[in-house]
Length: 381
Ligand SMILES: Nc1ncnc2c1ncn2[C@@H]1O[C@H](COP(=O)(O)OP(=O)(O)O)[C@@H](O)[C@H]1O
Ligand SMILES: [Mg+2]
Image (cartoon, rainbow, N blue to C red; front, side, top):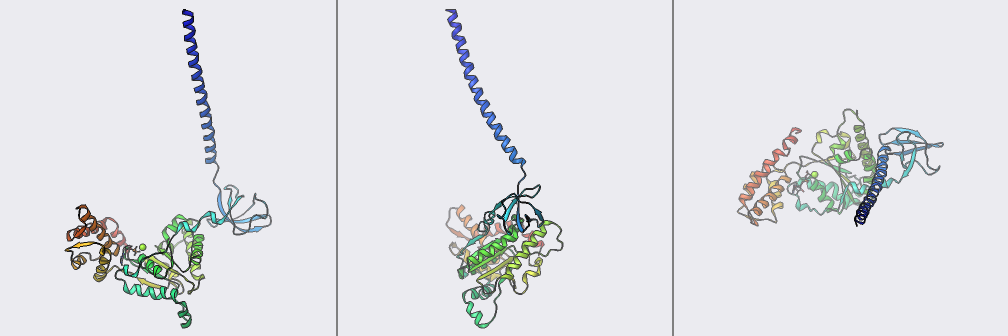
């Protein structure tokens, strides 16, 4: 009896062991797999990335390539002879710059992903004040797009582009969108500071593609916001970053010079730092029409206030009193006041906006002005 009991115990123990063994084996297998995977990952980390280069020229069996930093090298290729021609984009080894792969130029970047393309629906009525500016834009952008034959008959060349300058939030983008909308143009928006920061090595190419796109989608307006980031006067060209921006800028000038004033592509540049712009940008035949977009005067404030409060129900709000309190505000700030006033009403469970809501909103916007760097902007004048 005792013996049988012992056997049972042993059997149980043995069974336990075998279960444990297979568990351990399983674990071992998983660990081995993980190890293999990690080794693979490590290898990936250890292989240096390939660099992007452009084929300049075939020289005998070899090639002259140009890297994005502008340096040129004479290198060999591991690809079959005849697969490469000048202008192709290729990947090269970091160490010896051997060409290892050809990539299609369009897979490198797709310009449509990097710019904002839209058909704006802003009407001139949505722009408060700024009649003079709106008229001028209609004359130099809208009229030539709508009636090019008129200019041919009279024998004059309308400007290819304009430069809108003035403090932030005064309606420069709004004006540009309004003219795009009134001419049914494609609006291609490029923020110059992003262009020079994000597309290191690709800026010039991107500019080229933007203008290609503009021609393909004409009539179009190429809107370059924060133009100063691209077109600032450069005193010294020390770093490769500065040279890169300069190259992009040169490409921009070349594109501007390259199209005719009656092609239906127009360029609108925008800046609040006109003082630092390279004068090359405003030379005749380029962005040679300068339009100042200032902060609104009392009449302008009134109009902007009316535009942004047109859908609000107001109770005892005296426009003239509110306007007086808004002195010195930009259009964007006036809009912010209207939105904030609406919020004050909502917080009090009202749908009608009172004088008190406006007062609180003005106070709020004025106080955030100080924290949000208006003084900082003021530093630059
Ligand atoms: N003159 C204006 N009339 C009506 N709304 C304006 C005006 N100026 C600014 N705004 C409002 O402020 C927003 C931001 O203005 P924006 O045109 O982007 O200024 P900017 O380009 O000069 O910095 C606009 O979308 C609009 O709602
Ligand atoms: Mg703007």
